[in-house]
Length: 291
Image (cartoon, rainbow, N blue to C red; front, side, top):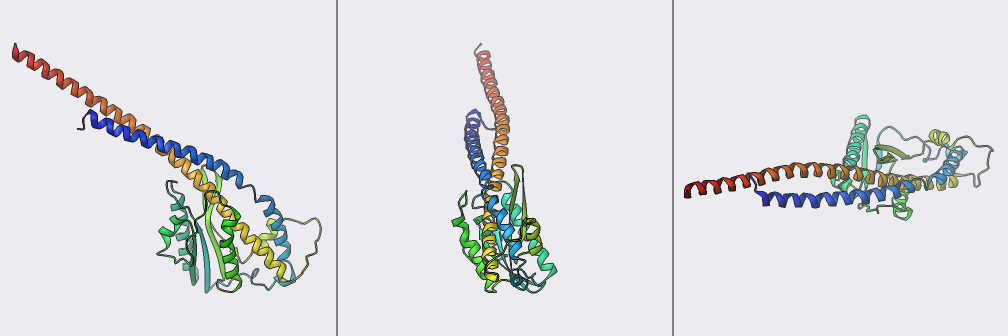
């Protein structure tokens, strides 16, 4: 059994770890508050963009354009954007993304013939999946609070490669932030556009606007902005979900360390009491011997 001094060393180590996890929780909570506010920034732009997308998808030039045509069932070459984090210590956040990707890939391969290439945004997703799903670009390392200039190269590449026919579909897997306790992994298609879904999201227009030029240039421009928005918004949700997961993980770690410290303190006190009892016994035994 460890002695009193060894128990003190362990308690000091646990106390240091608890201070670290408690500090990380407070830092993550600060980042989470900022990330939640940033989620609201693109909402007005998205509202107007959806109206334009719904209108542009009704143009005569859009009916046969590859941006609005529903993809064929098989074969298909898919570009998948995987939005994970660069750091750990955030609970099950990254593992949920990895499981969602694997489940979606298994479902797609079971139903049709597909070829998948991936853009990994975040090192954790790359390290878990790069042997199963090849990467077509180097891994993107984004900041804790993404800005549009960081996500623009990803969405631009996806749009350009879709338009030149390299890929027939573009999908994205990420985490949708609901609240601090809930964030759901989801996989959705961003190209080609679903005109019916965009019409529903855009709502009813009060007047019938006129779009000029009335050819596919307007549709391509609006679709490019829509892809920019999807990728940027996914990164905002990723940042908020990651920080929320880190807050919960560090809170659980801090609570568990407190419980372990309490149990270890009890064991230390018992060891100390046993040592004192042994010393008293030796003193009494020695006194009796001398007597």
